Amino acid sequence: MSSPTLAHSLPSTRGQLNGVLFVALFAAAVTSIASLPAIAGLGLSPLIVGIVAGAVYGNALRDGMPESWAAGVNFSARKLLRIAVAFFGLRVSLQEIAQVGVAGLVESAVIVVSTLAIGTWVGMKLLKLDRDTAILTAAGSAICGAAAVLAFESTLQSKPHKSAMAVGSVVLFGTLSMFLYPVLFRAGWLHLDTLGAGLFFGGTIHEVAQVVGAASNVSPEATHIATIVKMTRVMLLVPVLLVLGVWLNRAARGTAQHAGHNGARKLAVPWFALGFLALVIVNSLRMLPETATHAVNTLDTFALTMAMTALGIETRVSQIRQAGPRALTAGFLIYLWLVGGGLAITWGVERLFG
Figure 1 (cartoon, rainbow, N blue to C red):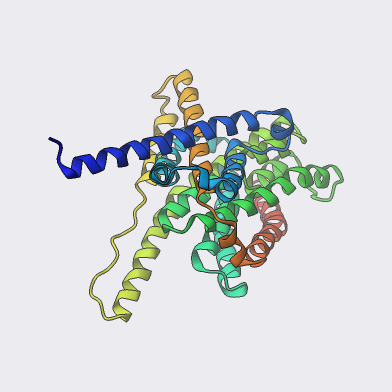
Figure 2: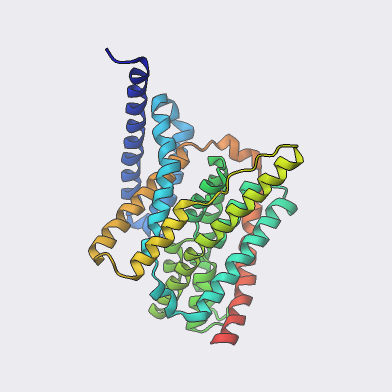
């Protein structure tokens, strides 16, 4: 005779597995939709299509999903995403970063740090957004779009709708950049050569796919430089997350002392960031065959799509509506900084290292 605990856990486990399977099937459909020429031509990755489709389902058809599946959806939006972000490191190598030299590294570091600082300040102080929404919006703009939002969401342990707002900003302004930047470059308004275009595109556009889409309208050389600079920004995800973990620990400790408690929050060191760094080293040392790396990257993209789809399913429009236009305004002001400030930084870097 089975124990009550075991009898209770079996249906729970089955429901979670069904929820994960449901998200996987949903993500497979999303991947097919994203591969359509009309969608791919807009530079919309499966990750972006996933969160939109998931949000539509979560708000319009969620009642049709059994409650027991919710645990599987939550698993995909939390634990699976951490694993997927770690394996994102196989897309970056130290050799590629070295190809653009000090100029690309300086460009990436200055833009990431300044955008995070300015974006968080604008969100919290100027527009009175909550801390998590402000940081997530700044991170998505500063580092690597939706993947950065996912990584920061996991470290901050924030609500799904806050991540959805940040991803919405990435979609809107990243897509705008993909079409606007090539037009500005060809009109001669940016005053940049091929190196400068690569630095500027890779340093300021949100998503990797958007960077490639925009730079491919300039030249193959600009596309190569822009992609490497973009991946250098992705690489900076690790130190930024570690710093965020230390900051969160200090903030929690200060709050505890103010409330008269002795306990302090455990240091929030994101293990998936360390995994990301380890896999960058693995990729740099060519420890895996190229075919294996490609296969893992394909699976990782699918896992990230599952995480974004699950995040969309957990998002409620009513929660996003509470933030009003302030979240979108924050994304817009950060975007203005990326265009204007990013262009000034690119000119400065070219003068120093060009």
